[in-house]
Image 1 (cartoon, rainbow, N blue to C red):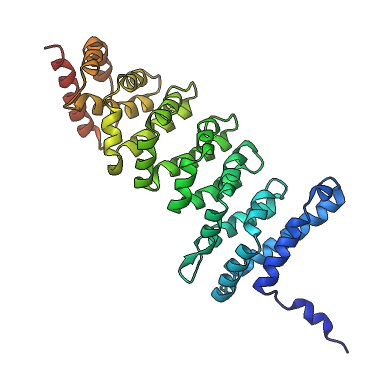
Image 2 (cartoon, one colour; image 1 turned 30 degrees about the horizontal axis):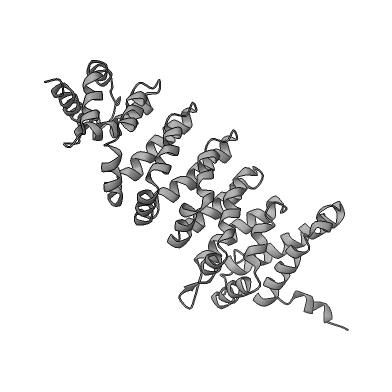
Length: 339
């Protein structure tokens, strides 16, 4: 009796897994994609190989992954240029394959081999892959998968720095206002991570690109879209008040154009936006070194501002007392400007 069929059950080695993934992805060529049956067969093979990769990286639910095998697989994936293939083939992959890829992506990036993040180093050497992932927000079918993969990349300072400095970064100002709510929200999550995860990197970026960045950001703050206005106002407060950005904030509150934006938002129909705007507006007013033109705008609009602030309240909550104290201080500062 032959037992040869048992050979088929032998688990693949990490080298074999990486090679199989590479070959199945390369099979998704131009000729295959236009032939329905050939494409279905090729995609099934990719899905099967991704399941094998997922099991090797994270276990099967009963047994833990073998860390030596995980390290070997990570090395082989980099060696075989698999990361380039999976990113470029993303638009063709089916939902199940993308789901498994997204699960594996985080593990691949975070896994160290001899104290080195092999996959992160690979991306650093093939940095255009990040641009490809960013541009994928224009494809609603894969946008959410790409968003998760991008946010995993942004956890690493070198990759976040590249995206901030790249020409593709400005696309986020478009993506956060896309008509598809889920895609726009996901793009905003990635945008937020870029501006908050690595304070020193963000400070360097804002210092070098101050005018260009805040010109674009002003359009978000004045967007006709309520969600865009509210999210961008909250995010502005988050990153301006980060200690590494203290000089950026000091520069921002010297500019009349941005004071006017906050004054406009204080009149917004949304109470939430009014309150968020107040927390930035108060910094303009409390600044002991207000420029003359800032003082003039505040004095000129004194009556309207005092009325707006008088009617502004946070509602019920534990922050009422602190808010009222801040509001009283700001109102007195505005009143002083006419003396």
